[in-house]
Length: 428
Image 1 (spheres, rainbow, N blue to C red):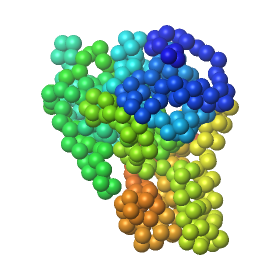
Image 2: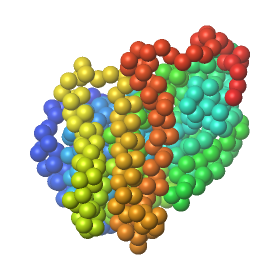
Image 3: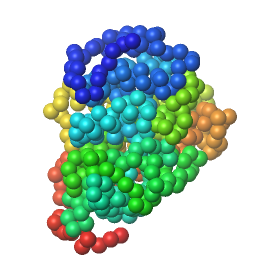
Image 4: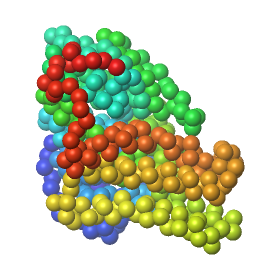
């Protein structure tokens, strides 16, 4: 059995080279992967080795690796046709937030079940009247002894239907200014008072949900950060989200869903290899560029100067994310508060550009969806999904505001004084 990091213990180690990561991962797959191992057993091995979220610190269950080494690991798992890590919002949002703001006890409680896939998570942030203006949220939490009673409504809640836990922000002091009366909770989803209603997207999938909270309960000890200090923690989560979307196109929703609800943990891991995840096609990748290049060749348009120029631009955009990652790692002083917003805008621009080029090459066939359609439905699904990234994780307009205000120091949009109590603010 290969040893791995233990939560709560500092096991700092010298970073390996890319070649060493590939050799180590190959040896790991040789030893453990087979056609009968279950999803739960495989994910437990990945977690024990620190492979689930390798960019976490070793004491939090990771390896302390940068994005280049993480890519080497994931590339090896893909090449060997082994199932990747659990994915989802537990890994993308909850784990790094808990690692940054959780107490030692909270880390010991929440991180291991995220890393081994035994708990699935969702994000309880947006509301019908608080999307772009997230700090205007009206879901309330009222103290009752050592618990809080939560009532309100959340929306666009990805994977809520299979989540064991959620990261929840709720208003705990309506008399404080709107940014200062919010608290961040680790919230148990499987309890009375929580109703989840799926929302079917035009792709035919139902990843998003409405969540209604009516007297649901959460322990006081599950507050992340300080009471009424949840806006700071939420901003950290949003930063992880924007960066994740910018680097991967979306949260990684693997075909095998983590947690106790979906029922995937006891199924053979090999049965999920090669299947599309819950979001389907969410980004422009090397596969997208290759598919479009081959399509141009098969339709005799590979010499069309307009098509060639568009392919070159798409390829360039797809390479920018990794290049910026390498640059930021080599020169940490170059990092800014706008990096996540800029990465997200690159992703949404590339997806729109890939959609338009797909239309140029497929014409009316772009509207024929399904596995039997041209490109196996790959470009069709990318096209159907293309409006979504400009909305989720903060709209493109919000990202541009953040870049202007936080990155460039431009004046904020006019509004009520910052110290106005939430109760006194005009409601939508």
